[in-house]
Every structure is written in C-alpha cells, then in structure tokens.
Amino acid sequence: MRNIKVSVLMPAYNSEIFISKSIESIILQNYVNYELIIVDDGSNDSTKEVIKKYSRKHSNIRLISKSNSGLTDTLNLGLKYCSGEWIARLDSDDLSVFERLQKQVMYAQLSNKIGLIGSNAIFIDKFDRNLYYFSYPIKDIELKNNLLNCSKFFPHSSAFFNRELVESLGGYRNRAGIAEDWDLWLRIASKGEIKNINKPLVKIRIHDDQISKRNFLSQAYDTRVNVISSIINSKKSYDPIEVFTDNEFIYFRNYIFHTYEKLGLEEYIKFTSLFKNPILKKFTLPLIFLKFIIKPYYLFSFIKFKFFSKLLQIHIADSYIKMKGSNNF
Image (cartoon, rainbow, N blue to C red; front, side, top):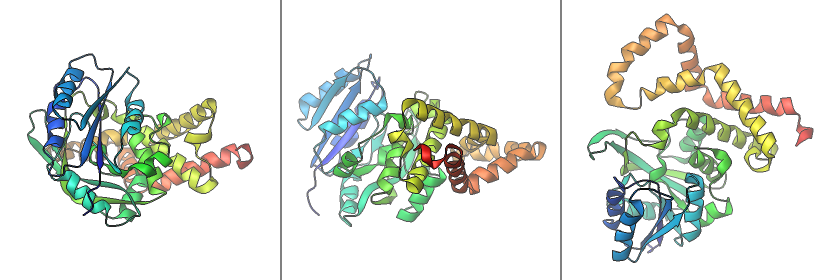
C-alpha cells in the first residue's frame, strides 16, 4: 500500500461540546500520514480555544479561522488548505473509528477510476451510546442510482474523495443549498466511480443542534433541485446551478419546490423520517398504517416517492425543459 497523504477536513461552528472527541478520533487513527484541517466558521463559544490546544501539541493539526458565512464557504476554504491526495470529511460532532483512514486509502488504490468512497455508519447519541446501525449499497451503479432516486446514501462524514477531481469540479456550490454534499456527489458520479466500504468506519452523532435534524425538509427539497439540475445537464449539456442568472435560478428552484409541494413531498419526508430510527419504527408503524387507511392519498404519495422517485425527477426535468424551450438556453 502506498503511503498516500490524507487531508482530514473538519468544519466547526460552536462545537465546544463534541469537537475534542472528533479530533481525538483522528489522532488515534492507525494511519499516520495525515493532516487535520479544521476551519472554524466564526464560533462564539470556546471552539477555537479547544482546537488551539490540539494544534499546539500536534504539528499536523491546523486551525483556519474565518467569519461566519455557512458550511459551504467553510468547506471550500478548507479545501484550499488541504494538500493530501485524498480528502476525508468529518463533522466536528462525529467520530472516525481507528482504522477508517487506512481502510479508505487501501480501497482508493484498487482503481484509478474511483473518485469517492464512503462507509457504513453507527449512529450514536450525545453520550456516545450506540443507537442503531446503517448499511448502504456498495456498488457504483447502485450508489449512483440512489443519488438520482434521492435514496439512502452514506453520510457526509464518511466521505473520502480525490482532491484533484473535486478541485477540477469547483468544490462545493452555494446554490446547492444545504444539500451541498449531494450536489458534489452527483458531479463526482459523472466523472468517476463511487464505492462504499461495507463496514461502519464512522459514528454519526444524533443531537438537537444538528443542521440536518433542524432542516431536514429544506435539505430534501434542495437535494431534488440538485438532482434535477444534474438530469438537465445530462440531457441538454448545461447545468442550471452553474449557468443560470440569479433570477433564472430562483425561478427554477421555485418551480421545483412548488411542483413537489403539490405532489405531497413534505408529507412523504415526514413519513420517512419516522423510519430512520429502527428503535422508533415498531412504535410508529401502527400509526402510519392507520393514517393510510383513513387517508389513502398518503399511501399513493408514499408509493410514488418510494418506488418511482427517479422517474419523477426525470419527468419534472423534462417538463421544465419543455416549458422554457431549448432556445432560451
């Protein structure tokens, strides 16, 4: 195995409670050729002081400070400081198991076509107690299909991607909203292979301050905007996220939002959120079946989004293209 340098990219904002454990999970890795780039997004708690404590002791840990501007800007700034051939993402409240970097480096060397590698995950609570385990498809074709289906995909904190490839793609994009990772994965998928390691190499923390927990509906809508943009790009060779003016993009985004609102996406997302925790599933299933009986429309919506999501995305993309007319682009 080549001794590839890995850059671990960790954005941080008001992370004083959990960031020490996240940093230590990297320090304890059995793979030593890494640097840890932590970008503080204008925290107003003791996050920076905690990071400085570690950076003074470890020369391969670097703190980058900036004013608060959000996750996408924070990640893109961090990318500029990463010097590794591969980049491992880790949020400041999540954990990497001790063999994560070694396993992903080994996997990255299996083929020069691979651009992105993830892993299965264990979900934990704020006290580090295991809650439940999630596995994801391992093959390129299945993962790419799940991207277009807006279906289950390995967590951002497990992502391990080729730095040069991501730089060539322009990094993360602000117009992707709070689904900036999904947008990047779609673009990587158009250039290379995606793989998943069938082992839990990360622990994802569930707590009340999580961005994804607070904004899961907005994230669902943004994800579909990104998917439909990708579909249009594959059909018409232009990417709405990239080439539209601000007004054009606002109209495009609103068109997709309104279409999904009419189709009942919000109800579907609320439904599926009840299934994410296997512990709660057995309690919520009876209530869901009761709702199906009382309001059959919900059953129709569930089937539509669960089994025909990709076809739905393609249909919406085609409808938008037809509505606007190809001569306008």
